[in-house]
Length: 114
Length: 113
Image (cartoon, rainbow over all chains, first blue to last red; front, side, top):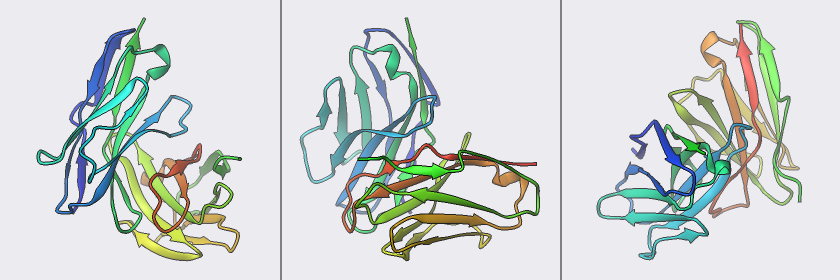
């Protein structure tokens, strides 16, 4: 069974600093997708970044980048130049290439300190 | 393009009652998934509908059911409500057969007393 683990329930970062959120997953599949979603206090879940497992290059979206280690089954999110608006719950998610079932971690609550 | 909408946004029910939640996906999206979100448990997958057919189902009791209409709108029903059903219920839509990501609605906050 596929599982996604986020071992940091809470994290904090100073504004303008860099923070890394950790995520590990367990799967026997070789082709899959990984995602980071952000859920601000208003609750609407927003996609932050996506990584296809067959791509070796780490995905980047502006200040957000990932460190994808396929052999280690690790998928961390790095937020550079943290802003107050980055404060939210962050969820790591996994989806197999076939089917449409997403598996989510339990989330990391990120606080940005002014 | 309008986003995913869910109604109602808030709901208070009594144990033993039943409830129906509604989700309207983004126009053109044929897949709708439902999740239960509770503190500490994260998001638990309930089921996914694609073109009016249930395609995937999570590990929830039969009290949880759903359906999808020809216009892709979906409803989720919970019968014989229990206190533990109190949660935020999220709906997510995606394009079709091989979606890459899901787009979430704002959720329905269900409180069971």
